Amino acid sequence: MRHKTALLILFAFIFSSAFAQQQSNATFEGYGMEDAVIDVAANTGKAVVSISIEKVSKSGSVRRFQFQSPFGGESPFGEDDFFNRFFDDFFGDIPQKEYKQKGLGSGVIIDPEGYVLTNEHVVSDADKITVTLPDGREFKGEVKGKDMRSDLAIIKINSKDLPVAPLGDSDALRIGQWVVAIGNPFGFIMETPEPTVTTGVISALHRSLGRTNLRERDYNDLIQTDAAINPGNSGGPLVNLKGEVIGINVAIFSTSGGYQGIGFAIPVNNAKRIISQLIEGKKILYGWLGVTVQDLTEDLAKHFGLSGKQGALVAAVLEDGPAQKAGIKEGDIIKKFANIEINSVRELLTAVGKAEVGRKVKVTVVRDKKEIVLGVEIGERPQDLEKLSSAASQEGWRGLQVEGLNSETAKRYKIEEKRGVLVVNVEPGSPADESGIIPGDIILEINKRPVKDISDYEKAIGSAKGDCLIRTQRGFFLIKGE
Image (cartoon, rainbow, N blue to C red; front, side, top):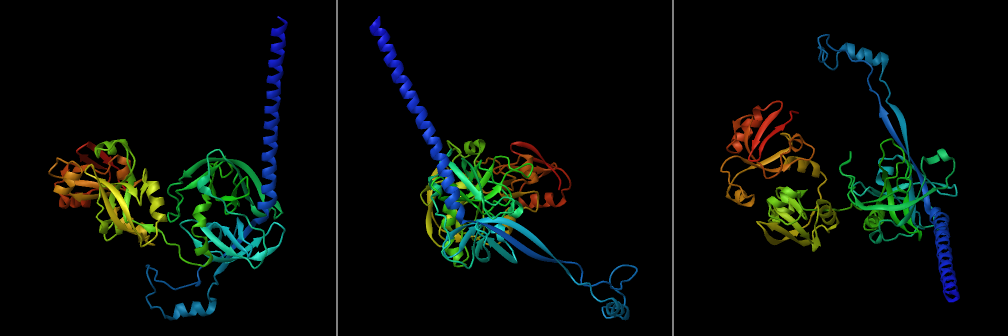
């Protein structure tokens, strides 16, 4: 009995010692993180700047009076009539008023010679840029290069031997990793040039904000964090506990305009790829295939005989684009791009955008359940891409793009119908999209009017008004009037 009691006491001692050691380690780790955040604030914080901008806008009419006919239209006496000249001489012109718009943001020094990385939208169209260092010194900022699509810019200040924030590796990030956001929320309201520090974790990777008001911006590969990001933080760095910049804060998601735990940052590796070009003031080139693509749904995957939804479905091929020249066709499913597995439209757009313009790459597509490898020479993304895409999708009639039926399309889409027109693309968010019509549908009737071919289709939509009842091989759909 005594031996058992002694054994129990020994086990209790060992357990309590292990527990105490565990508690000691937890406490040590806790203090370690606290020290890391303090070091990041003290060291990397020295390289974070405030950016204030001014834009000068003009408004008002330059002419006070102009004599016009009492019946409307221009003056019956012509442009040089006596009355108009009289009013001009007597009253003169109204001078255009100038008013200043001010904006605030943040930036991070990446070179001791005074190069500052920030968001393009922070400095866009600025007439005056003032950069304030954490020690209170102010400098005039000059935009060296900017790129709207990546929403990144480089500004230069006339100073040397400045503190620099090291750039990390955003590809190595993991969900749950601790990060620190540094910037100047609400600008100079705080009445101090020192940046604010907030902490949080990486909430998600490769997030997409979808379509924005400025569709030229590409927000399809963002870091999501719960570190507090508020107005004025844009352009500031998101930093790991080593003090390395792993992202550039770009936006918050909020229903009230305030912080709600969801912030986004541009991965720093996206910036590293173009920083030298921005410093040199060069135009940033992005790869382009010349296709409209969409993600596969379960129904579409089943329709094309695929076992999963991986890939990007080609809904339209732009005329004379790289894809058309390489032989890519509507209905192809892109599975690989330059040996990169493609699981979604986002992955394809990211891979194509990063591809070198003029380079020839292999693209693997599935067509009629067979894999085909095609060589595509990457083109340069056009400035007027939105116009080209709109033209290609025939957005003129409720977001539908159609083509006539022939033996090739019938085989590709497994169509038994001998009449009608084939829907090859539906503009996202359009009335056709909201009705439930999808690529692969065959339009047979519009408002009970038979559609046998493209000619019938054009006649039918030419006279269509208000809500339209569409009959396809899948049934009826109602497209709302515009």
